Length: 86
Image (cartoon, rainbow, N blue to C red):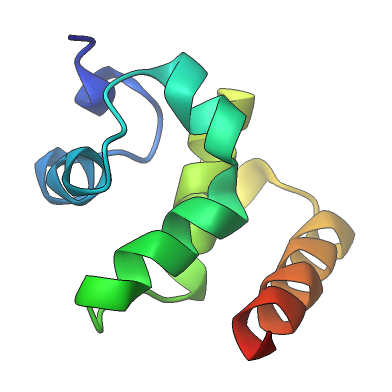
């Protein structure tokens, strides 16, 4: 099992939430994607939010979430909102 806390933006709490939906590695996280990961976390956990979405996306990209360009964050947010409604 990979230590998810070695990824940018992923602390012990978020790592446990990811493990709770079956994510054990960066490859698994990349496969599911940030939007689906947050949607799945949100089924059981009301703390799922945009900041979590950006943190996971940054982890996938290997960067701090603050470094994701604003227009890219807006696109991710819009895609998440659309997926959340469906």
